[in-house]
Length: 186
Image (tube, rainbow, N blue to C red; front, side, top):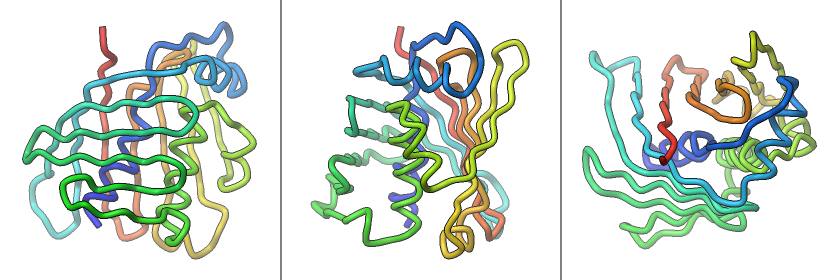
């Protein structure tokens, strides 16, 4: 589960160099829709309730419109994950997973792809969407609509500035959480 968990969160992080003229949800998502491809470095801290110290990872993220996501983990050990057309490929293991076959994966990739592609309708289909901003420093909270998904995921918080995303927080119902910090490619 940890490999899938990482890729799901990572996809949300690949939000790069868009800029919104205003800071309403629709403006931020429009800026995202205008980005055909982006690359970013990321760091991740996973906080697991039965582990005393956070688990750290780092690597590169890549997004290509409309729904291609890659996560290349450099540390703690090299791994590669690719999402395309509803299938998650764990490259190092040679395994393919149908995202729609699992409620958690389906919801998480709806959040990732919906945000990266700027598809507000897709986001609102699967989530209750809450958006706040302060001088274009914004936060979007996605709360799953399906009960069985809410049994696993409390919510996903995405924070950014204008059309860029700098942090994604995935909060699981069991108290575990993952914080991804994104640094856009220069």
